[in-house]
Image (cartoon, rainbow, N blue to C red; front, side, top):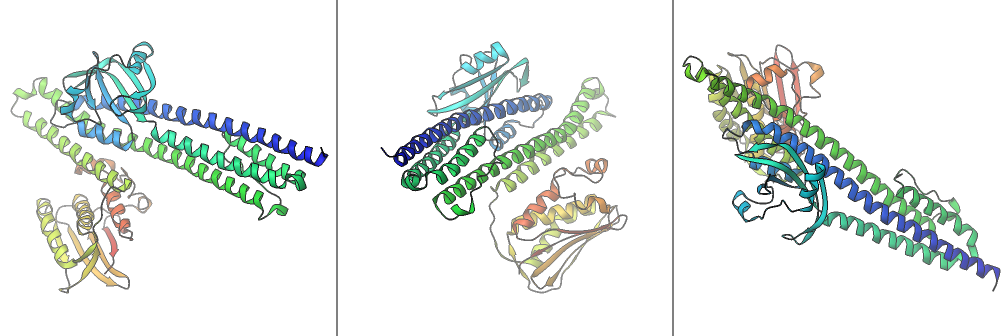
Length: 482
């Protein structure tokens, strides 16, 4: 057998070994990495839900229902949330209605629950008999039990379907298979004549694959110019492209996790204030103030105001979640701007008069039609007018007007309010951002109104412009197509 043939065969079998080893390690490690990452995320979510439920437990005696709130949180985090009593009875399930809970058998014998009883935290990967799909569960034992609508919660369990993980791993295996197959065919075809040049780029690819398997997704394959536009170069470019996409996905996941963590932190902080205020009012009444007619009404009104604030906050949270997740459906059409502005001002007139503020709507008496989602534009305009009313002194004025420009119609809401310092103007559209926290809470703001306005106007291909001077007032403007 010729040396050239021996070398070619050696290179072929050697390359097969390298590729198979790299593929095995990548497949094994990636599956473990995916599973470990999801397990850690479930543990984090379980801890967060325990904290939220412990915080929310102080308001369960009010008319505020937490069922829909917890279902919304579970939906946003793409997990299945279950609250279980000491005897294993399911008292809440995010994927079931309250009426269906009686159909669920007790969960005390579930592996993750038994594990949680022994070790505080239980982890189980098993088949869900109802869905007939494999799920990963994380359960946490709560000591002492948390009161929840009369029931005692001793276990919080979160779960996630492993279908998506299996799909990702399957895609990775397919990608590895195709890359490996292409590489082997390439070696068989050209190893006889150019065995030496082919081994170098192959080793580079194997090395990068190994580095990826170790978690270094910054590595890239560099191929000599003499291989440019040949099969090896195309293969390297395809692998680099795959690495780029993987790296982008990891960056996006980290960003999403950071945003989600910040959002939950902000929500928890915003919910605590009215909850504690309600608790303080109720405790004061229970301690004897309820029998004093001179003060009991005052504390009941305080509790009612904070309940209203909680309701407004939860509504805005659901709205901004729908907008940012893309669930908000937009219906664009042409509508009469002057009639629209006139009707909106009429709706807000009573609120302004209660604060002795005059709303001036300057109309030109012309037939002007603009293009957009009428309901969403109204929501944005009402938020802007509501802000002007809240942050304008009694006997102040609000001006609503429009002007035609080259690319559409510019709508403005101007007030004679407190004004916004220049250093805050770039931040006021962030969620929960407040220029004056004490004043914002005093007037009942949720900190989400301008963020909702920003998303709605951007969905119309425009942006919100703001001009403000402390002590003189502010003007918010946006453009709609005509």
